[in-house]
Length: 146
Image 1 (cartoon, rainbow, N blue to C red):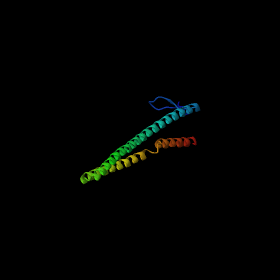
Image 2 (image 1 turned 30 degrees about the horizontal axis):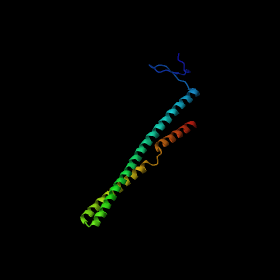
Image 3 (image 1 turned 180 degrees about the vertical axis):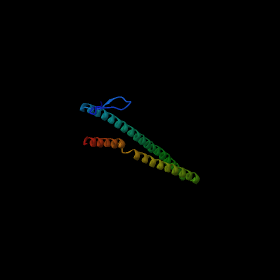
Image 4 (image 1 turned 90 degrees about the vertical axis):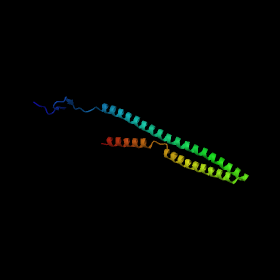
């Protein structure tokens, strides 16, 4: 005879599996463990994002420093140009002027590139991690209201 009211599911060739509902304590324990894992994962995501933004800021700051050094040499060349111009040697001052202008142009381009890198790193907020955490909270709220 076959019983139809049993909470046991039988599949030919498979082991017998018991179907049961979890207690409230087990559900709370599972939820606590899952929340713990979720929070740790979100913290790792935030850490990785902040590391990436920190590296961008460091490169941008380095480029600003390099532009300042190149500008310093550009000013030195322009000063040499003025000295040579006063001394009356036309070809030498023209050469110094050209070198100074080129160095200052390089400094300007490097400064703009550094500014661009710094803007990409700002604001120093882990946007991806915040968005992911908000999505997780919304999902939890939706499931709680079911």
